[in-house]
Each structure stands twice: as C-alpha cells, then as structure tokens.
Image 1: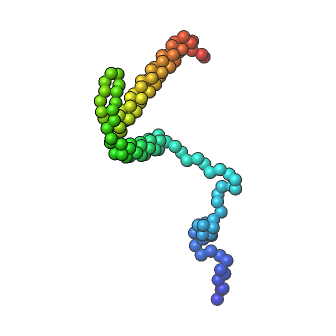
Image 2 (image 1 turned 90 degrees about the vertical axis):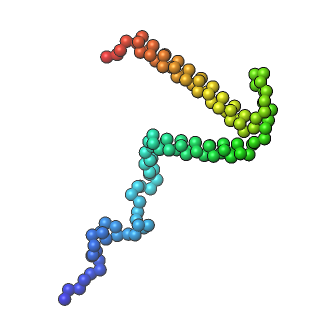
Image 3 (image 1 turned 180 degrees about the horizontal axis):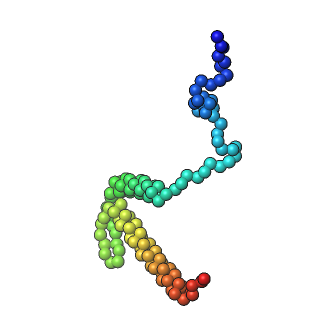
Length: 124
C-alpha cells in the first residue's frame, strides 16, 4: 500500500493561497505608493451635501441659542429682531452680493473669450 506524503496539497485552493489572509505578502513593493482612489462628480456632490447638512445643523443650533431680541438700524429704518435672524439675514445679503459680483466677472470673461475668438484667425 502506498504511503501518502503530506507535502502535496489536497485542494487547488491550497496552491493559490497557502498562507492565511493576514500572513500573505502584499502585492505592492515596499515603499511604493498605492494608487489614488478615483474621484467622481457624484462623490464630490455627496461630500457637498454632507458638509451642507452639517452647516445646517450648526445653524439651527446657533439660532436656537440666540433668540434674544436686539435693536437693528439700517438705512434710516430701525426695529427689533432676534439676534440669530439678524445675523442670518446679514449672511444671506453677503452671499447675494458675492454671487452678483461672481456672475458679473464670469460674464466679463466670457465676453473677452468670445471677442478673442472672433479677432484671432484660425490656425491650420
């Protein structure tokens, strides 16, 4: 009767991965950098939504903690309003001004590009 040797593997999976998962050598060379993960517009949008949600939570907490009325005077008008509301309105006003200035600048750059295309002859 032939004697079986323990040196030959019984299963093909033993040939592919003879070591347990934790003991396997890494496929990258030592000191080599791992490839960077691919970034997409969807991941950027998801990150923006998460940041926006955190900012919204912080804004709600801020508004709940600052409900004391304050005196406000602007362009000859005067009144009383909660501090949080006054600061949110001021922040929105700054945002609107920034959007208008940015839109004007984008329009200016587009007009400049359009005029440069018409004045420059096409290259062949």
